[in-house]
Image: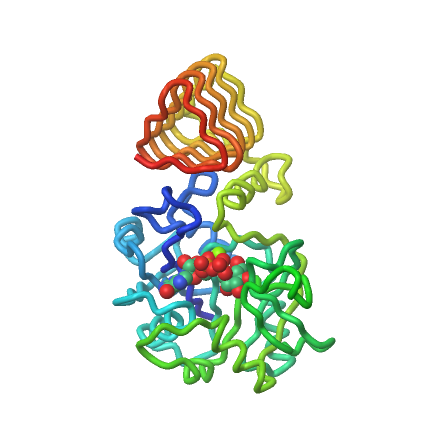
Length: 331
Ligand code: GDD
Ligand code: MG
């Protein structure tokens, strides 16, 4: 089966890390997010990936110029302007001549979903489209999907107010689509699969959903971009044994439950907890970084304090003693 992976968004919630780089090219424990996604698809029998690109497509193209990502053939479909999720799927499917049942994935999702069970479900119920659902405590930032006991979707409500949400089962961003779904998407304009295509499929009783409690995370916010990585570490929920500390890092201070990239220097008296330090970061004496992300080649001055899901962009020099809490800093 072929997969269209949506990676064309602006990644606004991860700015300034994403000002010049799509979020799917940001590292997740040492390698770009897209490589985790593509490897996982390949391990579930996906033979070819079409990357649906919009914002900063050259970053992908220069990383994988030969049209392969970790051994999987990839094709690029570059939108002339952002077409939103369904518009992007139509554009990518047309560019790659997709005329068979195919898979679609939000490219910022990391999951252990058994894709073959989703495919079997889709075939058994005879759906035109099937969606993977997962549960979350607060559904208000997701697509909320009530179903009947067979899995037939009764409605699709994108990002409702928490109090209006009829269920905690949400759209987890993996879909199996019949090629006929493409005919429902008008060519060449912005179309949201969540706001237009899914509600219309649901009202034709053609949309089904498969519930699974397998590991799942959308990496698109500061808190979840950090969490997705901590979950991969030794003692994390996914059973990996990576320490998260690159062997080229030079650590004199204290580091706890964090991801430390290549060439990072952490000076004496500095403390790093629950954080992600990308390649080349320097944390100077007695500085504190907790629950935060520091971009490539940035430095944190002596006694500075970076806390509470703050993001320091790439190449930023945070001054001595500066305090950043629950906010962002760009160059
Ligand atoms: N090519 C292209 N063009 N890709 C796009 C576009 C576009 O115009 N807009 C967004 N994308 C890509 C993003 O890069 C991302 O990988 C994916 O589509 C989803 O966009 P997000 O911006 O991450 O959406 P979200 O997280 O707010 O909501 C979506 O995902 C949730 C689950 O993670 C929706 O599908 C929700 O219904 C869902 O619950
Ligand atoms: Mg997302």
